[in-house]
Amino acid sequence: MRQGSGSTSTKRWRAWPKADPRELDAYVPEKIRSLYSEASMAEEAGALRAAAVMYRAAVEELCADKGAQGRDLAKKIEDLKNHGVAYDLVTDLDEARLLGNWSIHQGVEFTREEIADVADLIDEACFEIYVQPAQRRQMRDARKSRRDANPRRR
Image (cartoon, rainbow, N blue to C red; front, side, top):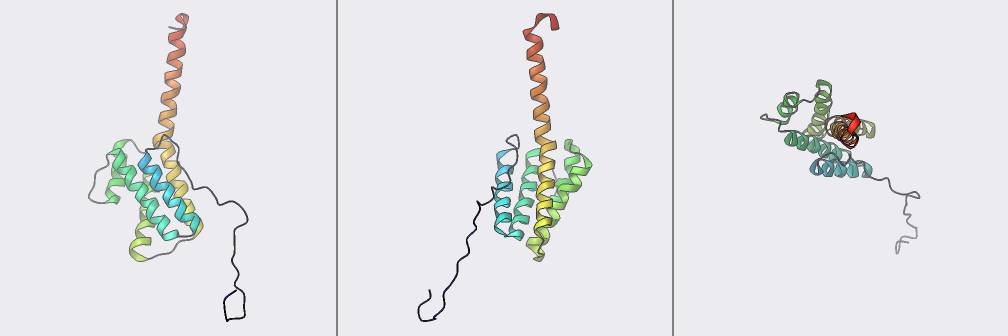
């Protein structure tokens, strides 16, 4: 109760557990995962412009990790095609760049759904760029180990 006002103040508490931040698979480099997780925390807190900027930062780190070259992020994303990244993933990652740019430079506000969509695009891109190749490599290694362990399979 506020003193002297005669009225009571009410605090609202969330009755259910706070949502865990979005996370990328452990096969994704730590710097990208950290930026993505921080973006997710901003998203969960309702700081949607901050989330957009951080998701953009995760894409920028992905470009650095893959060795993409260019004078700006748009050119680096485009250069991902020269590093084995599929055209549709490049297009999706550019959406994250646009969202982040519009948020930081023009103050554009986006809905939760728009931010979640970009987060999902990044997650899917990271799955195709990092996770699937690592899983295929593990399967190849396991097949080779089984063949090597059984002389009749050579």
